[in-house]
Length: 316
Image (cartoon, rainbow, N blue to C red):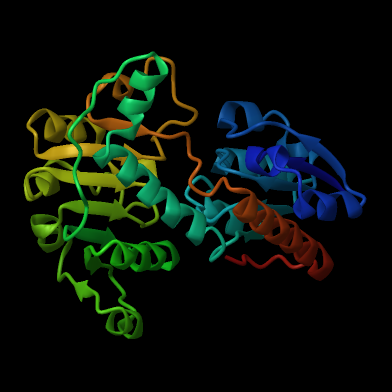
């Protein structure tokens, strides 16, 4: 069994997940992702399985792989937006992922970004490291309203932590877990527009698909409460960058705090690097030892189960 491993989190974090993979006796090649279609299509047919990250597993790639040796796809992580699932089903390529594992790490990262921004920690760190002593005036988050878009596993963990910070929590999702919102006394918005009108902070926790592509756009931004802080630890393509810039320039958006971009790794001339009031981290929300080990074990177990069953069913 020849396996291609592309997840850098998996590779860079020694732990039980690596030990489990080593014990399987697979021939494992590593290639640091995310890998573009133009590169992975050259080699995909040589592998029986791929343990992937956010590589571009397009229809062309999957067709090429299926014509060769490829039979199994195990996604390290949750998001499946880079995998053409319809093509995978058509070519009888089973796909698995690792839901309900990284929510603690990602939820903590939301507040790491938020507190860094409102307390100006990123600026103050640079100033004091260079020998300066300029002190910004920061802000408290106490009593503010946070709007959580998507009340799944991550959104729920963000809500719990928000309550601990004495934030008012407002949520929007197409499907609401009524037991959870009642237990945690969370208000539910009837629409996304209703949510952004009253929220001081909005945190995105929805998948990227045709329905959510550029869901943060000029039309929605025009409904934002002035001075809103937007946090994105979900997917970069949820946000229209031109419209985001308009919102920042017009002071409607106080800050955009993101762990994800529409193009990753960040391109050399990426325009957002020069924008004011933007805080970017390199997709590290779930990149903690605890989360990596758990996701890695799950990804390997998923692959083992696929091989043992010899199934051609899509399992997501």
